[in-house]
Length: 170
Image (cartoon, helix red, strand yellow):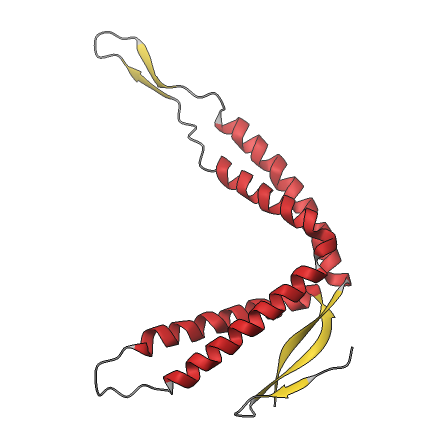
């Protein structure tokens, strides 16, 4: 695929359509996501200001920039999703495993025994079906499965390419 170059209005930043590894594209997507968040925060913060206050930038231009970043983010995300289709089953399994691991972190494992106020006997206030050890063992097993899948996906991402727009300095 030929590289496609585009220069922005200011001429300071350009984007090139380049074939890169999925791993690299994911890093670029994260950078673009941070830039989108920053731009959205600026638009949100400076959209409404005290009457007569000068904004530190042209809010309409910043809004237009935000819209372009949103488009670029959607395009890049879509390209990565399509290129990752061969491992989509692994990605889905990883999502479910993460949820399973998170759930186990919320399970109450308190076993509470208190002394009776009437005599010296003990009264069980909380009883557990699954001990902390049981939950930890399950969690470790799930984490190993998640790690194995992550290794497979990482290997795929490092060896398969996708065409995405990459920002370059002018």
